[in-house]
Image (tube, rainbow, N blue to C red; front, top):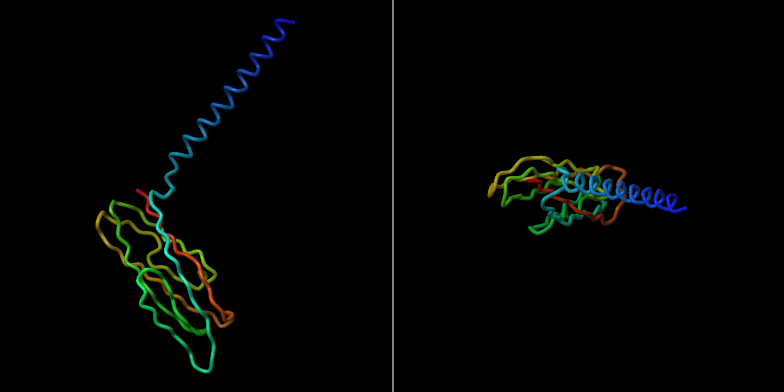
Amino acid sequence: MVSENKSTAKYWIIFVAVILAIIVIFNIFLLTDESACTTMNIVETSLEVKNGPHQVIGLNTDTNSLKMGRISTLSGVQRSILVNSTFDAEVEVIMDSPFSSWTTITPHNFKIKKDQSMEVQFDIFVPHNALEGNYTGKVSFCFKR
């Protein structure tokens, strides 16, 4: 009976040690993930689709967001944002919005040096089947060292 308890205890010790080793290895891989962003900056974006007898293109001078303004279907709008970094980085630009499929981002991946600036262009073309209304979302700038 005593030897049976010792073997059961050894089994549980080995089992717990294996589980802890798996957790440690998993965390090491998780912490060394090179695809993770060192810094993430998020900018709000919006667009209003409005149809009428004449094509509409709204203007926006707000420099703290990417508000595209009011625009008709089958029309386009272009906005840009200046990106800079305090360290050498690879930058990935990701748009999460209902109109991301209407948007071309140039460049959407680039390298930037410390204290350098890069202009990122957003070209939006509203398709003929777009519904009228307000569309909002965000643009994420993922900086990787």
